[in-house]
Image (cartoon, helix red, strand yellow):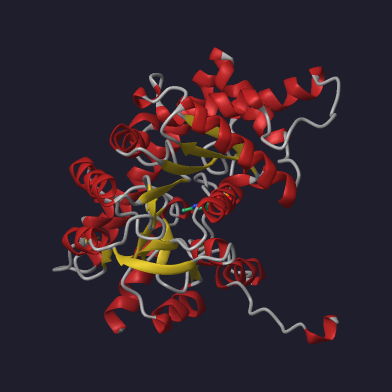
Amino acid sequence: MFELLTRVPDDPILGISAAFKRDTTPLKVDLGVGVYKDDHGNTPVPAAVKRAEAEIIAVQASKAYLSPVGNPGFNAQVLELVMGADHAGRKGDAAAVQAPGGSGALRLGAELVRVSSPGSTVHVSDPTWANHIPLLGSAGFKIERYPYYSAAKHSVEFDRMSAHLEALPSGAVVVLHACCHNPTGQDLTLTQWAAIADIVARRGLLPFVDLAYQGLGDDLERDAASIRMLARQVPEMLVAVSCSKNFGLYRERTGLLIALTSSAERAAIAAGQLGRLARTIYSMPPDHGAAIVDRVLSQPELRRSWTEELAAMAVRINGLRGLLADGLTSRMRGSDFSWITRQRGMFSRLDLTPSMVETLREQHHVYVAPDGRINIAGVSQANVDHVATAIAAVMASG
Ligand SMILES: Cc1ncc(COP(=O)(O)O)c(C=O)c1O
C-alpha cells in the first residue's frame, strides 16, 4: 500500500531553516521562519509562562482527561482577552472551544462550517499565510482568493477587495487576518474594518477571522479591535486564536476557536457540535499550554508580567521596522521604505525576485522566505547594517 505514496516536496520555509542551520558563517541572519526572536536571535519563553509552568507542575495532582472542548478556565480567559471585558455586547452568544494551536482552531472551525454548510467556498486574501490553503482546502472546501495587497503600492487594495466581497454569494466564508497580516504586515484601518463589517452583514457572509498575533502589532486591545467591531455588526462569526506567538507556547499547541452565534441557545449547540468534531479528530486538545495561559491570565501578578513582556516585544518589532527602513533608505537614495514602518507584526514583504532571494542567501547569508517575506523580529541592532547592505545590494543589481 505504501508503495503507492509519492514524495512530498520539501516545505520551502522549513527548507530555509535547515539551510540556515548548515551555514557556518557567523554573519548569517535568519529572517525566514515566523517565530519571534530577541536581540540575541533566541525565541524566549516569557517569564510569566515559566513561572506558571513551574507552579502548575508543583500543584497538579492528576493528568486525568479533561474534555473534548478542553480547559474551561482557558476557554473563558482567552474568550475575554479577545472579545474584551464586555464581550463586545455579545456575552453568552459565543461557543469557545480549545484547539491544538491556531492551526487546529482553523481546522475545527472549517469542520463546523462543513457540518452546517457543506457546499461553502472559502475566500482567502491574496496573498495569505501559506498554510491557510492546505489547512482549509483539505477540510473539503473550494478555496478562492480576494484581492488584498498591492505589492507596487505597499498598501491594501481596498476598493478591489470590497468590490470582490460585495459580489460574493450569501454564505461564502471569508478568512480575514485580525491584525499583523501574514505575509505582508499590511492591516486594514478601523474605518476599512467598519466598511468590511457592513458588507459582510449585508451580504450574509461568514467572517472567519484568524488572530495569531494579538499583542504583537500595537497592543492587546487595538489588535483585537477588528474582531470586536465585527462582533457588534455581524450575527455570526468564527475566530481562530493562536497562543503560539504571544505566549511563546509554539510547540505546546495552544489555541481557541470562537464561534459567535445569534443566541446563547445556538452557542450551546455549536459547542456541542465542536466537542463532537474534536472527539472524532483528536479526541481532546493538549492541556499543558492551556493550563499555563489560564494561570497567567487569572493571576494578576503573572498577567501584569506577561502583558509588559508582550508590550516590550511589540515595541522592539516596531523599533526594528524604523531601523530597517532607515537603513534601506540611506543605502538606496530615491527609494521610499517608510511603508515598512506603517506595517505591523512580524512580517513585511520585500520586492525580491526568487533569484534575488537566492543571491541574498548564497552571497550575503541572509535567509528570507521564497516570496520575499521577512521576519522583522530576526533583524537586530547588531545585524541591521549587514541586512540593509545585503538587501540594497541585491535590489540594486536586480
Ligand atoms: C496567520 C497565521 N495563522 C495561524 C497560525 C497558526 O499558529 P499555530 O498553529 O502555531 O498556533 C500562524 C502561525 O504562523 C499564522 O501566521
